[in-house]
Image (tube, rainbow, N blue to C red; front, side):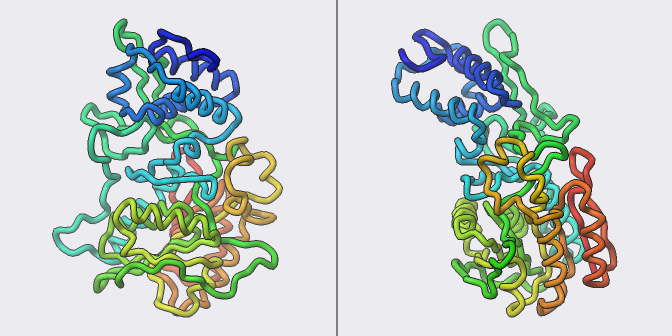
Length: 401
């Protein structure tokens, strides 16, 4: 084991984790203990329960494992998000593959999915015997990783996915770290990759373009999905990125027809992979295109959901290092005031074959009132309301007619 920082012969898994966490903390990583644990779980292929059981076991005599652990710590210490290192992030109780081609799904965006499901069940009442407004699902099995976003309460009443670094033997909790939302609204075990200040940036890769990069027509790269069941809605997720919203809505409501669009071909490919991962690829159509332009001709949209770029261009240099240096700027930059994607979509609503009955957009801190005003100017709505996130920010604008 020589030559790899922090790994020496005879160390236990707990000791290797603790040294790794200390190294990340010295590098300024906010969630050092949780991130070190996530990396260790991923590297060893263990569940949280298995790691707790094996805390006192010796670190394996494996030079390749040593090097992989060193590389993980070095990359995380440099600011690379832990989700890009492991290639996964949990959203609404499901595992999604992620890469630097897409933004990392954030916990506050789960509230957008929840709001859409609840409002749609009111507009399109589910058939008898089918659950309406399904609560956040628990992941099956007991092998979930620390930091996974599992939304059913565990048997002891705690949020599953909270990272409990319990030590074996002497009863001491090894670096016990409960990553439940507190103060800033972060969910359990989530790496804090939101932008500094107001917790930005939630969401995935977006399909807004700036300046003269407009695309006049859609490029349908993968068509799935039979039409929606009679009396159920057609949903469009604009700026799907990893596909977290589109896949979640399709999985939660099997009768819905879902279309997912993005300006990034790499994002579309990842969303398509995630739809296959969760068995909904046949019910989602994927479209490469810019905002609502691909849909001005075609079947009507009943539900329009989007989490577009909303960071003002001037604020990009001040974002948290993980976001600024590693996540795609195409998915972050919302123009001079951060409202350009909303402004353009509001203008394009009148071009659609029919106005959606439900529009649900995620917005940045302080943007909700202005986005609501754009929607009011674009059409007559029965109701426009806001959904407040864990940090008390008006994070989602919901318009219904």
